[in-house]
Length: 193
Image 1 (tube, rainbow, N blue to C red):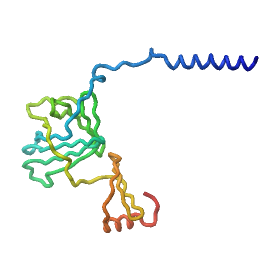
Image 2: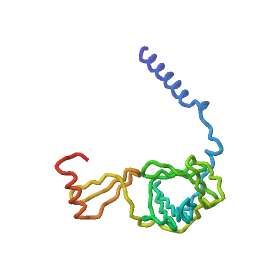
Image 3: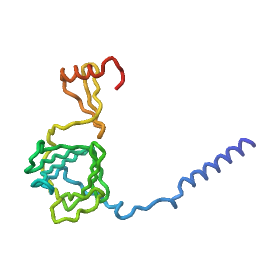
Image 4: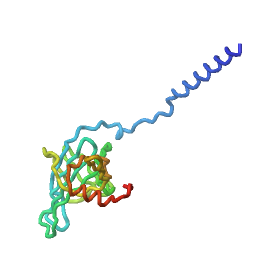
């Protein structure tokens, strides 16, 4: 009799628990901006953006499917060297903006304008200007751009890897005796990273 009462009580508790899990009254509905389906985007854009003290900034932006990006910028007519720079980081897409976060944590914003991308200001708002802040789609593959990376170099058993701090990407490092000697000298006898 006691067993039957316990089994019945457990069944009733389970039933109420399941009914509580099925409560749909608290489901949030998506606003139209959130529900908008994202269209596929080209993976590279190119254009000349305005520059205050040069003829323009020749800009190429490359998005990778893994959520990383690379941007090459060349200051046209610049008197100082170097006039070319590369930056990289991670990208995310909201309903109406492309958000680039560089390796230092700085954000820049773009929005789709047809197939093109329009650069936005530092807060993600449109730039009110007579100048062209648009990058047009380009059929370019990701270039092999030399740039400074910040991360962790790991060497073990004649194999080396580098993990980038900004993106979390891990790269195999080609065998390089000079780099290996420098790493071993910097590490010394310490086991600290």
